[in-house]
Every structure is written in C-alpha cells, then in structure tokens.
Image (tube, rainbow, N blue to C red; front, side, top):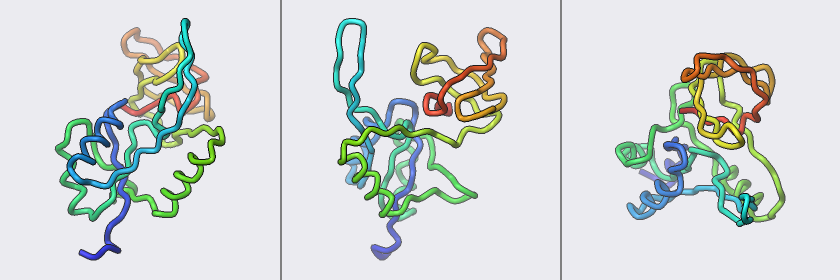
Length: 167
C-alpha cells in the first residue's frame, strides 16, 4: 500500500480509557493522536491542573484500513466510529488544526452533537455524574429528557451535551 492510502481513523473507546488505549497502541507501534487539554480542577480541599481528554471516548489512529482494523481486539476499544456505513476518517489538516488550537492555550469547549433520541448515555460531569439513562428527546443543546431506569422516571434536565457520553 502506498503512503496515500494511510488515513486518520476514529476509534471509540470505553469511557475514560482513552489514555490507556493510546499508550497501549503506541507500544504496539501504531501512530495515534489523543488531544488533551490542561484544566484547573477544584476539589473541596485543593486545586490541581489535570490533563483532560478533548473528545471523550475518541482516539485517532493513523494507518491503512487493513492495519488499523487489527486493533479491534485490544482492551478498551469498542469500535471504529462509522459514518454512512464506512469507518470515519479525519483529514490531516483537521488534526493539524486541533493541535494548533490546543497549542495556543486559548480557552474553548467542545460539544458532542452526535446524540440522538434513543441513545444510552452516562452523565460524565457535574452533580449527576455517573447516572446513566436513555435520551428520550432533545429540546436544544442543553435540554434533554432522560429516562432513568434505576428509579423508573423520565426527567427533563438542562445538561450541556458535552457532559453526556454514549454507553
């Protein structure tokens, strides 16, 4: 295969496994990119700068489709992100733009706009962190109706989409 058939593919990992999966794949000689940003987190007794994954559960891997598909058996990898039946790819220019934006140090936020009615989700931040449910409807970028199975109720919540990740 020629160099031109190598692309950046998008892997979907289990929640909070991105860094471990990236490290493991690098040890196996894969080229990966995991965008992280530094954030100041505050606990009740202290503040600390921590590295936070920019796109939760997403990891970019470079190579040919035949080569990268062999990673599917690795622990922490759920699947390749698909778009219209094909493995999703991201252009080299987009990777470079993400790297450049992170390098500037400018504050920004990301939002996952790929949530749909019926998606099983987990709230990943805020006072409801760890609660899972199903998206019943989406009223806006911050209004979600979630079905919380464990208590048998449907609840309308104002939760930024970036705080919800698919199960």
